[in-house]
Image 1 (cartoon, rainbow, N blue to C red):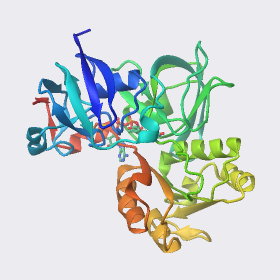
Image 2 (image 1 turned 30 degrees about the vertical axis):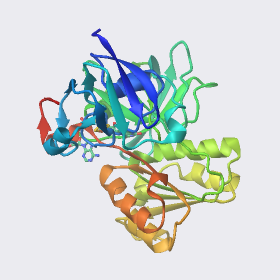
Image 3 (image 1 turned 90 degrees about the vertical axis):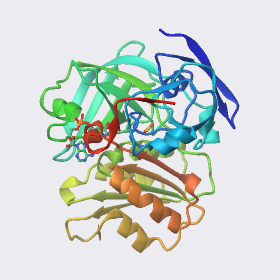
Length: 353
Ligand SMILES: Cc1cc2nc3c(=O)[nH]c(=O)nc-3n(C[C@H](O)[C@H](O)[C@H](O)COP(=O)(O)OP(=O)(O)OC[C@H]3O[C@@H](n4cnc5c(N)ncnc54)[C@H](O)[C@@H]3O)c2cc1C
Ligand code: FES
């Protein structure tokens, strides 16, 4: 443990105490303050903020794509990499007033593997049961960091279920990458009865209370997990807003949870599930998911949009949604950035200002 310093966030006026050994983002999460973030690894820039007061900050490894040198010189920082060595005042550039104060403090927990089931050739449905205490409070759409056994590494995975209160379980949909540190381990070595350590919940991919707004979900691959959680929670809570879920896959073999999604259409009469295939002609929608949305949606003015999946899909979807009339701050997204991709970025060893 290092010395502690006070970090104040503006314009929200929230103060937290930060140990020198932890990042500002981590300290905030531990104190239930939900700041905007994505990768937590200095790669995506979602946590970029401006230092209004104070200078003594050290940064862990980060990508200069996320924080170019000129921005560092101007006073920007990455909260997921920043350690405070004096009291600081930080201006949040990107925050969600509804979410920032509703955070649940993160917890470290152990869980036992209950099931690992293939839902497609490369997606696995992982079910964990929490060891005592058998509940972890989280909002549907949030994620946890799972430790990769026998390493220092963690990987983020979104819960597909809505609550662990009754079952004590956490459900995930995980894509298997050949050579993927966690996902290949999951596919080839992890067994029912094994234990995993996890930390969470994190994330702001949660349903905002905006009852009059139409909902549009865009997902691809394992991006199914948090969107399924949101839809399941809407069904449980009887939230029947006009909702469309566009789900992008390559072929019919990549589609999953079809039966449940069709059942959700029955339970939520104003919900429509639209799968689209990019590499196969069939009697449903064909093309990239963004092309399908462009074709079927002349206007999305007034809608709330939720986008989740591989970074290229999310990056293509955001400007499209803006062009179709969705207000930028009503586009909520989780980019499934991967640690293994870090080699593609220009990475500094460390930085400070
Ligand atoms: C907020 C958040 C939530 C997430 N939720 C989920 C989730 O619910 N389900 C899920 O499956 N994943 C999710 N991810 C991604 C997940 O955390 C891992 O990054 C992913 O599973 C790969 O980890 P790995 O250890 O298997 O592969 P790594 O060891 O990290 O990667 C090894 C290699 O695999 C290849 N690879 C890995 N990912 C990709 C990719 N996207 N595209 C192309 N090649 C790739 C690359 O060659 C890479 O170098 C989430 C990520 C974030 C940031
Ligand atoms: S969360 Fe900080 S750069 Fe991605």
